[in-house]
Amino acid sequence: MRRFLAVLCGVAILACAPATTLAAPPLAEAADLRAEAARAARAGGPLIVIYSRADCKYCQTVKRDYLQPLAADPQRGKRVVIREIRQDAALPLRDFAGRPTDHASFTGARGIRLVPVVAFYGPDGRELAEPLVGAGLADFYQSYLDDAIADASRRLARP
Image 1 (cartoon, rainbow, N blue to C red):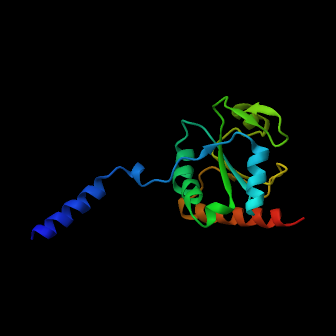
Image 2: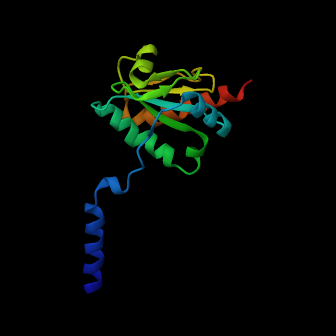
Image 3: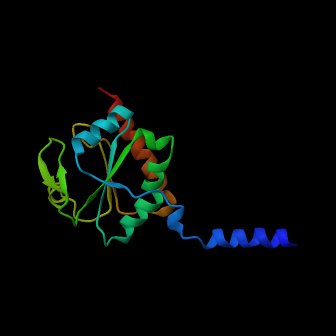
């Protein structure tokens, strides 16, 4: 009986543990798109950029449920580089040509008004797949993301 109670208490403690202890680490903010895209291409995949805002709950969902687990995946995460560009921040950034800019200016220059947008880039800054705009339907978002990564990887492999 004591063993049963000890196991039951252990399960209860794990069930009450904050989700953040089990969550994947946060995504890195973009700093040098040319270097990050080149690194992704060497690994055989696209640079994946999520354009987001701090106050966007859909952005948080896409990051938490799809992109952070992808980045943490030991197999799939090795083939892509995932970065975040914040529409609402003046964080320093080097664009695909190596020119200095900032997150907010770069997002505006790309014509991105509504977030989240998940885009897929090659080393020259060319979009390799259709971007995912919005959070989509939860039942299908993973499939859309997987298809876009596969399309981007195929286009990257073509000369």
